[in-house]
Length: 264
Image (cartoon, rainbow, N blue to C red; front, side):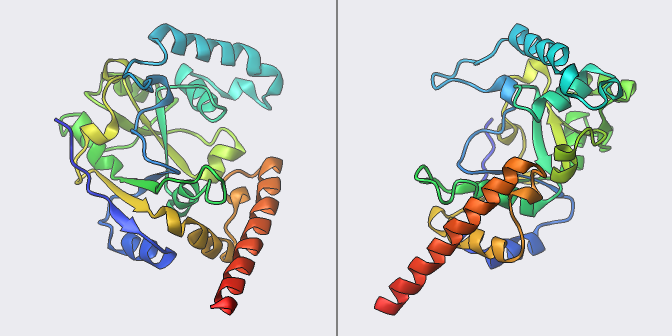
């Protein structure tokens, strides 16, 4: 049975902060989207007609090819021991896997929900999901264990596949990007390929807010004034370029606001 998630609408940064202050203890993880879509990992995404985009064979082949071809670009490939650790690494470079990213940083999730604020494509409300990982793991282990499993520990990796549903897991900080996002993952078993997280969890485990599309620019301006930018999420050269363009967009936005207020 599909769970009902009635979203709380957010129109400004102060409302977002107020929501966080009232969020029950345990909702330590979040995930931000620039528009609304199901909480399914890349490996289990579906086409418009509801069919799976990638087969089980495709997903394994993607991971094998990534592992075989990435060695020349890795600083320390021997530090990646298991297949699931390779899955974590591949996930952060665009390979569809059975992992869904979450972060302990709710501000990072807010940034993701605002990512296209100054784009012509920005015509949707942003979405942020908040997750209680310990309650999720209790549900998926029949109330036997609420611990956050660790990828690279053999016993924990076996437990991930034996769980009854999606389960929260962590891993060592393999690279700078993973470290900067302060992340954790929800692992989906192959037999649960059809089950989105929002269909599996009720509001005691998963909650939702919407960031009003008309408010995205103003909220992003407020975040920028607090020193938040794309380099806060991705500490790499490309983010420096994005922050330069973001600064220009915000300056033009503020200028237009001032001109409109003056004309009024």
